[in-house]
Image (cartoon, rainbow, N blue to C red; front, side):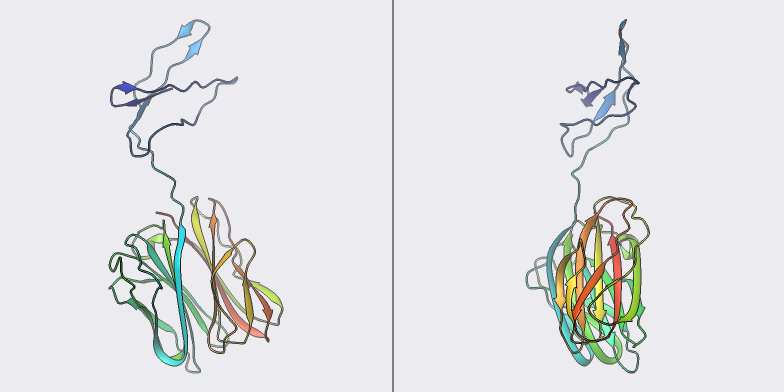
Length: 281
């Protein structure tokens, strides 16, 4: 097999085997350069003519999402709450926001905005038996690069609010829910110590995707830790108003991630858990 850049032949790759191989990996190519390929067969008689050139292909580097920074805030009896990243955000990255709300009047998150004007989409939400809601929102950073935009969650009515803001590079820039691959949520009431989880997602459709785990409760004085295989990015606990945990891991195609949280001390807790898998860019 011979790669070509335009009409210029590059170093060929020999493919051998019995039975003959039907595929191979060509190494040493340059990302961003367009190649075509020809194939010829060799046996005891000699080498046959080269095939017609293949369709043109351009290799690109493997994209792996990476955590950039996080911010969090929580407050009692408010209608909105903002959190500001500690450092400037980067255009082309993506913000992912966990919102927890609770009130006796069943306050829920009605929207997420930021001071730069980026557009947020709700990816999932769930309400527990004690009226606590968890929701996950996201926006590609198209505005405000190089600044520290305040991300604000607004509730349907007054209540306790917790906000966690995560910034990642390497995620899809698709609008709306186009960034979402699979999602799974769960809620329950458990004594401690205990490990709670969302349950396994459906199989992921791509490699190097980002599995995010989000935990929330309305403030039970718990001590939290990330689940097995996940890296904790935010841990707000113990707290009297909004306990939250955000964690992540990179997953392969066909994986069924199951984010979990370890509640090691506290009291009987009504909890919510979500696993959200986002596509890479």
